[in-house]
View (cartoon, one colour):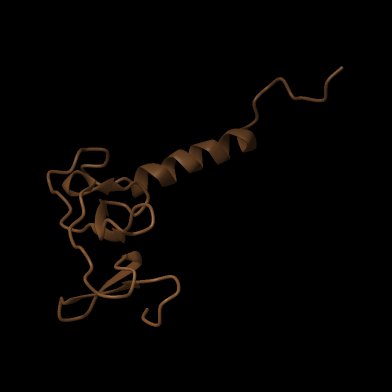
Length: 113
């Protein structure tokens, strides 16, 4: 034997009706239509391969979750500084004027970064 009601009651139907009414009032014209605009914003990440001997690699993402390499994953910058001439752990930051700044690890045992 179950305790479920078999007939619908007015108070039981009121909540779903109000939910549909509220949702319908929130829908804006054009809701669900594809946008014709393309976002001009993207994320760029500085990366390295293996031990960093290949130099700086770049990747991009539209949402910060799914990343794609740039330039067929080829190095875009080779380092000429540091004892080991590696480019590991790159950190790239863009300042308020639009200039990019880059720092990286150049050696495991040397006295430079």
